[in-house]
Length: 353
Image (cartoon, rainbow, N blue to C red; front, side):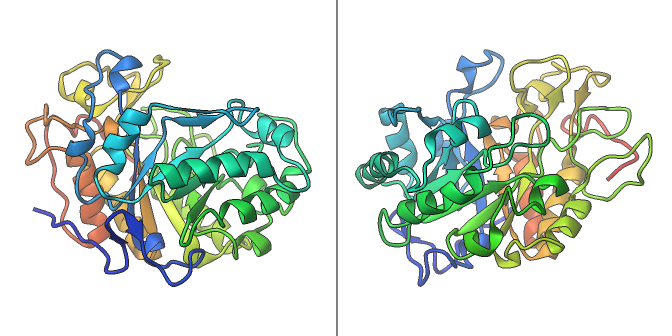
């Protein structure tokens, strides 16, 4: 059984103690877990994950059911959020806009957005929130019209937000494609490096689901360019090395989700374990894929963000050695342990690793 490894500089009660809120090495070496909650409201076939059942190896939680609109009004289920913060783990809230990148261009100004930051700080102070993870700062190729002011106006916004309270955590999600990562008009890393606590390297869903090529969305290994090319994590690492991003603040996403090509809603391993899948239409990472991703982060010397813990086999419908067998294999790779296979979980494999 993998023991829960808590860093000495993590939280006392529910507050992370650090010597430098923007340079906390302990956070960037830790295990963070995306948590949605109430997933059955989106898909009745999904088993809800109670906050109390979140694996103890999740040292920091990133709670996604939070939003703030264009007039800076917060939308969140406060009672449910309390059940998450009651776990006495640091809790971050994802901070995104309804329409992503284009909305950031609308709400930010030369001074950032003082009114909104005041709302966010007040909310964090009242609800025991350790910080925010800012998402959607990249146009992601042709998806949105380029907004030239975002790269400048996000700087005062983050400066204001980081002053909410001592040791406040600021994460920034980063699109790892070269068109964004190495573009100074998208990310001003020389300035951001001194302001943020960590960068989430969004290595999930870098490719379309194609089970004839790979049983997932992002392979660990680099593949040859050509008809069967897939953008992999090793290639992302090369892009990072050749960018201006701080290498000490890197945290890689670990994709933990089976994907149904035809579905419009999320799918989970609980569905896989109950036989509710089709191998010709689903991409289903197996325990080896997940173990290798954790091992990749270990070799890179970074932390990990498991995205998303709700999508694992949370009730052990597969009859594996334990619940959360996907997550446990990521942790085993990340902590230098051994892979634990599971027959009903490992239903798909491919020539790519």
